[in-house]
Length: 552
Image (cartoon, rainbow, N blue to C red):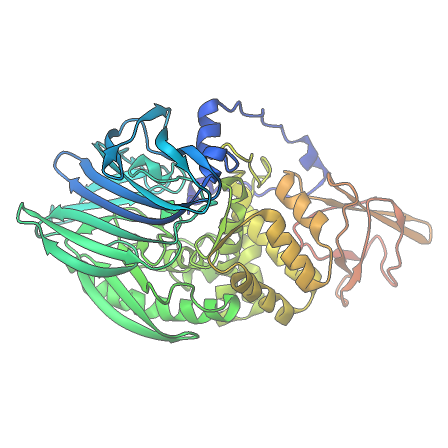
């Protein structure tokens, strides 16, 4: 959700001058980056994580934690050594396997465990990590990551976690890679008596520990990525509701501070059910009926924690009262409720295997804001919204990052990603087919991790068009393509100027004020038939196409 530190007033107009933008130097990656980011290391791929039981006590006064995490896994090959992850500032007290300590070594934030025997392929095993220490403190959540230790307006403790970019291993031991989501987990959080913890899934049990602490056991029945696992501690009050959705009755649970009950009920009533109705229309059923839908008030702005979306938008529409599109449409609804809940489909239901493909999370979710607007205010409003967000696009580097080193691409994955998807819809030129593609993505890749080619190939197959060069240009290169026209006597020539070899994209043109027609230029300058269109009256649909235009 970390987009809005990126908001800028720079509005880059797509012309051939874009190619003159300064290239950023290629970052130097380290061995630590490879240990953190690798999706292919045999020490990670040798086991498939099945279940966690995370059991953590939070000492708020000392800003410290202690506890354990049980790893249950299935071996995918024969092995005797594996890797899990835990930040080096946290102490490992012990690792137990079959009641006996396991030897381990640490390198940066990676932990390497050696078993006393070969773990055979297909066998199911488990071990438990006991740990303690002071976790990373987030100074500006959610844009950095870690624990947030704050106080509410009455001075009572208000504690939470947010760790999307930094990684969940900044506060708990896990296999900290997106490609392997745990199938289910128990989250047990012990907090000082008088406070509550709200985490993902459903509350199974509350236990008075007789030592001044209360333990809350939350069970997540579905696959969940590590950064979605959430701790929220405070003097929370509960509001309960239900929604009659595509898969039946969905429980809605809101956890807010007591002084905000009235405002929360009004704002959530006005936004949550309309959001669910719109997104089930566009994307298919909410993916977590079994775990429910929660909004949890937090000190920071918000995050897409699965089935426990955190919320800090001050119970107002827009993004802290602002419209990020500059069109006025973004003030019609609560940005955090819409955007962060959109991630329940794109990011949580469909998760990228490598953070380099984070555009799958953020591009589609940025676009969901436009689709929400369209559902209630019409297609033109939705397209005005997505067009308005272009003012934040920087075209500074490719949207796709570097694989296997835990490196995201450009923050343009949000706004440029949303505009890319609106262009793809325009090229397909069949709104119902487009809606079925969005729903089909969530059905085909339900509760799965994916790659960029998975997404592109699916859209190609379902649309009956090869859109690969379009995705490649906008995702793998920083420049946008330029549509060049040359008028020579009675002939008109046209071509695309692009980074991708063989780039092609049908585009809409017209004589000023007339009806749009599609033309299909290539990267070769060739004659094009555009009856009635001249150099003086040419109009290109730059409202729906984020492209440069050059007329000679």
